[in-house]
Amino acid sequence: MDAASRPAVVIDNGTGYTKMGFAGNVEPSFIVPTVVAVNESFVNQSRSSAKGSNWLAQHSAGVMADLDFFIGEEAVTRSRSSSTYNLSYPIRQGQVDNWDAMERFWQQCIFNYLRCDPEDHYFLLTESPLTAPESREYTGEIMFETFNVPGLYIAVQPVLALAAGYTTSKCEMTGVVVDIGDGATHVVPVADGYVIGSSIKSIPIAGKDVTLFIQQLMRERGEHIPPEDSLEVARKVKETYCYTSSDIVKEFNKHDKEPSKYIKQWRGIKPKTGAPYSCDIGYERFLGPEVFFNPEIYSSEFTTPLPAVIDNCIQSAPIDTRRALYKNIVLSGGSTMFKDFHRRLQRDVKKIVDTRVFVSNARFGGEVKAQPVEVNVVSHPIQRFAVWFGGSVLASTPEFYAACHTKAEYEEYGASICRTNQVFKGMY
Image (cartoon, rainbow, N blue to C red; front, side):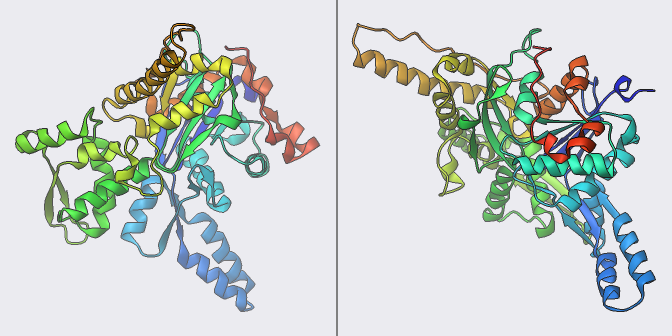
């Protein structure tokens, strides 16, 4: 049976979570944290036996080190229960940082989670918009050499978020993708499926920073949370209770007037002693997501609000694309899932644009009147895995197989073929 007649495997590797599944499905089969736990005792054993002359012990320790590792939630659990397992995060701020760990991670994804033979399926992998071409070569090498895949396509994440085509039956391939993941935030303008590379904006505040800010607020208030659990509690608070406020001062007043209505209780169990504990969740419910709109409350180094970054991004794009870009600002990534996030973003971007139009009209008097600019922020239920869903849609079209790099091409020309991946227009 030909690999092209089987569904392609779609893996979206993010800094915080990896989404994986088969093309044609509406949602990924698995969403797991992008983390690997390696057994350090075997690694150290292979190093120490390397100094001695016992090559058999050295070989078996090396083999065990290659086999004894875990990924995802299982990795986190192992590292907590045993000191021999060390956590390694293969992706930092959207870029692969540790290729050995990344290869192990893919190995477990393919064989333990998806349970498929990589030689029988085409693969679609995703990458951050600012990834170096060398990184694509490494990815191609691992996929073709280690897993022997018949075909590979490396797609840019924001293009897939647009390709998800959730707003209309016609897939709109011009828009700005605001992709806020766990480790990186990118604002990427796309025109007709092509990324406008010179206008990409990246900001150093993402989901991980919201978690750290919530952890800091709870710590400063003196909540009794076990130190080893505090980051996990902050993450769960962020995912469960946080929302975006329209006015931060009004929100403070509401909380102060009716604390019983707005303050929530968090209950947990101490991992070491098993004793129960509880803590209050107050202002951090709306202050967490506020770091995107008023970053100075969290960081003194970066103080440009997200709406201003989006406006700068569109203003630096070619002039004939700007109206279309304002009309289709698409949210993607788990950190855009806060309640009312899209409303606040739309309001703030609209305010910036309207002010500019007003100023230009006032400056030129009644001679030339600028037309109002339509601003529309698109929100939808699958924002969290929009990139994966876009990949699933893309990889189930017939054009996908023609656009992939094949094993035969790789053997003839080498890894450099993976540097470029054509944008295929058949579906738009």
